[in-house]
Image (cartoon, rainbow, N blue to C red; front, side, top):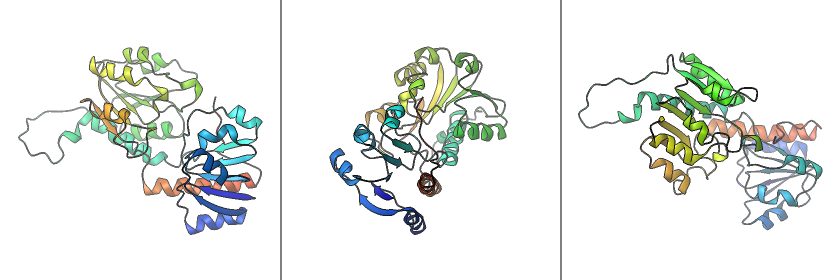
Length: 299
């Protein structure tokens, strides 16, 4: 079995050893174009990739298993890929704890306004802010991250409900003071959280999202903030390049006085990196055993 490692994939010595037990490993490094990447992976049975140039080449690939160390790669037609025997596998769950931590921090920051009081050097007047305790929270999407986030918020005595495929979105969010977007970027969720959704939210509520804007209308979110429907929002600006503060999406949100924006950093911990690379190796091992896991299926 030919295994090609492309892009930035900082495998440990032990992780490389495990891959070598499965097949012949070639490290190609980074490519500078779609064509160069395609040449790097020519003849590979398995590609371990950081995601660079993958989506642009999917229509040109046949008979290959591709695994990457994160969850979302974008909206792809996996049925069309299956007809060419192209399988994509993600690192589902590897960044869960890190994203949950980011979300809890942002929920507390929005409600308690902690960021207004850190290293403060001016005179303050006494005022009280809101606690998570007793708040009605709706998590839209009850997958791996969403369900674990719900458990964390319940530990802080929030009242948590979920929106799944079987629930009515408007009914589930009614009366909620905090809404968390945990949707996957699949065809059925495209712009699901539209202007009608934001206009129907509880006045004075808060919105948190750590997923791609594929799922929500950014303009409608900003309108809801400007019109006072939302008291605040926290957004981790994915799918822009991690830590990129120059792109228009991040800058527009970061400049809004009611938004706590971060430049796609919710996942970024050393623990998540190790777990994600471990998952890539496990995906390759499972594929070699004829039982591929974490296979991406877009519905």
